[in-house]
Length: 169
Image (cartoon, rainbow, N blue to C red; front, side, top):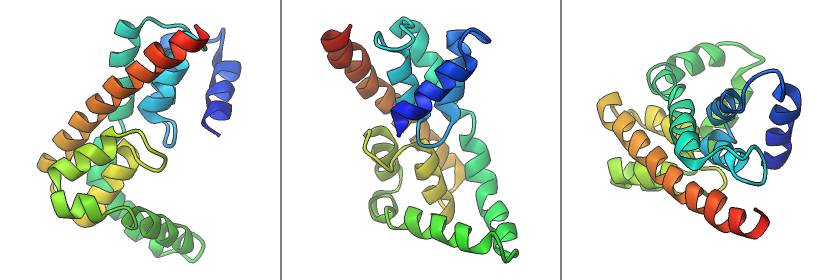
């Protein structure tokens, strides 16, 4: 699914905007986030040099995070007031909270690892949603997400440019 979304961005926007802007957008999108951005940046797709790709992807991944941390519970409360959106919000909350045990237990470091270790269903969007639902204060949650995104950038750089780039580059 991630590869299909990355391809969609490249086909739809390729030639219309620069590679760097495509990376920035991919890194902002839930599911893809920084991980998808760095995969797209690597030698097998857009071939953007690592030193340029990492800051673009980190910034792109971090742009939505303050909004999620500060506003998502208010938005969810409003959405729960509507018949049509309430089931979707409850499903999202249930799914996010099913992954919250380590974050709840270890807070800062739990959030860092949840965001930073590139596994399916983890990342800055989900980590920020869980932090907001758990009531973790912004001044603790945001730095943890930033550190987690930087950890993910390191891991994904090794995977995208080292391992995958070495095999397919």
